[in-house]
Length: 220
Image (cartoon, rainbow, N blue to C red):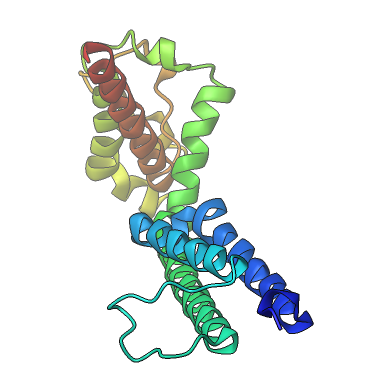
């Protein structure tokens, strides 16, 4: 009886086709999971060639199969399923590695739960949204104005911070005169407290760094 007319043959061919369809999905629809794309394509070509040989009712034996004396669909099907399981295992391992790398990257990029950092970022955002100091506005400060303002606030904390610590509610610290190198009108000099002034100084430094970066990008 012709093997192609046996129900078992048709059932096995359908199973092999299903295996190939799933393998093709993994190899091409999600090709990024493979570390060696060419290897996956080569495997797919070999399996498709084997299926074609099955459908034609014969199997071409080569020196690659010296111990295979009789054609066995079950044996080849088992081999295909094993190859698929190995491919699936490799995919699962690679996906786990990708997930671990994503977690590591997310942790590295996450802003630490630190009130000081949050306050500095908040102050920088306030300067932009409430004081209307846009990036275009900051780009006009080409004579270290932002840097000088930051240094003035930090210098005031360094030299006069003790006044606030000794008399926090006296208003003396808040009435300190602006340093000589304050870059803007005196109306903009508004010391509040050592901590708040350091937060403003840090935000001004960030603004200066951003300005430098934009200038570099424009130069190409």
